[in-house]
Length: 248
Ligand code: NI
Image 1 (cartoon, rainbow, N blue to C red):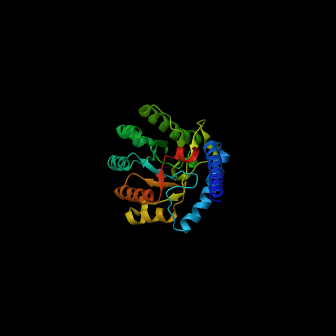
Image 2 (cartoon, rainbow, N blue to C red; image 1 turned 180 degrees about the horizontal axis):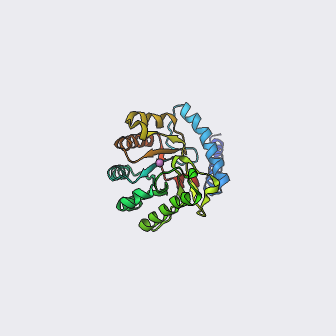
Image 3 (spheres, rainbow, N blue to C red; image 1 turned 90 degrees about the horizontal axis):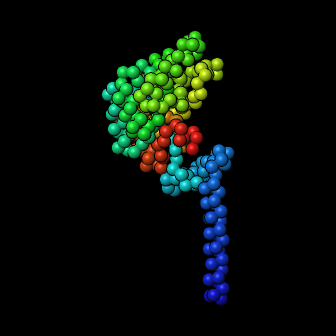
């Protein structure tokens, strides 16, 4: 009997191994967008259960950390963007900066630093006008001029565009092939300039794969971003750039 039990255990162990390997193969080869999406959806569903049971939430079931993207608009700012960069580096966090062409012209060395630190640089137009209210040529010039300015410093044309006020329409495709990036959580940090309010807004509303809208032109935004990072990292979130969030 003893021998038989051992054999049974071995058989069960083998079956478990086969199941485990099968799962590994599915997860490892699930590079197709649809399959990835399916896995992510499944992960999200199970995660809710794990949260409800109070279990650890370090990773979702596909073994990945929960992704989230911080985005900073309207910079670079001469004081707070460098402060933000130092604080992000200390926390090993990558973010996305949607830059204004007129500020890029003033502070090219900060643009260079953003790139050197491994963050993603996007286009936020030249001087923050509502693009759909401008004649087509002027609107396109706001985007194209900023792309050229960024290219002149980084050697890379931005692929991502955040139109001011989130206002864009298909007719404004300007013969540039850019991905429009909006947001899921608007911190309104520029309006409140209140550290506690900014932090609360994010922590109350945030979910996996969210894009957070902030601005790197205020001291309160820097301190709030750091508290958001420190808190969400403990909850198992990994901060990534928007291209990683949207396409990986
Ligand atoms: Ni803006």
